[in-house]
Structures are given as C-alpha cells and as structure tokens.
Image (tube, rainbow, N blue to C red):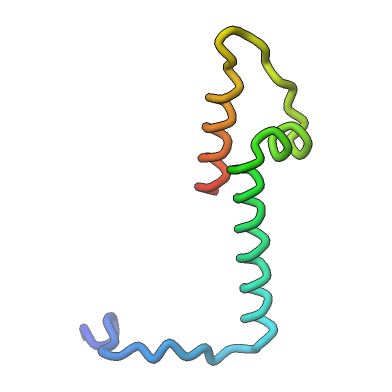
Length: 76
C-alpha cells in the first residue's frame, strides 16, 4: 500500500507531449518576468499596468504601498 502512495524511485522523465513542456516553460518565464517587473520597477508596473494614482504625503506613503504590492505579486 505504501509503495503505491510513495513510489520508491522517481526517474524525472517527462512522458508527455513536447508542446506541453515548452508551453509550461514559456508560461513560467512569463510569470517570472511579470513578477520581476512588479518587484524591481514598482512605479512602472504599478502605475502604468494597474493604473494606480500616486498618493502624496510626508513621509512618502508610496514606498510602503509599493512593497506590499510587490510582495502580493510574488505570492500570486
């Protein structure tokens, strides 16, 4: 019974179609680039893509808002 749940050896060979494998690779690259855009270029990813209007104040509240949204994008 445990051999069915936990197989003894994993060979790590993909037996599916090559289109599915390359589609997964392209999707992973797209999501990685999207996350990098939101993480390192907050002003462009947040204002241009999400159409968010900046909030002005002293001290600048936007730095904290940028950090929250960059972490939110990385977790999604």
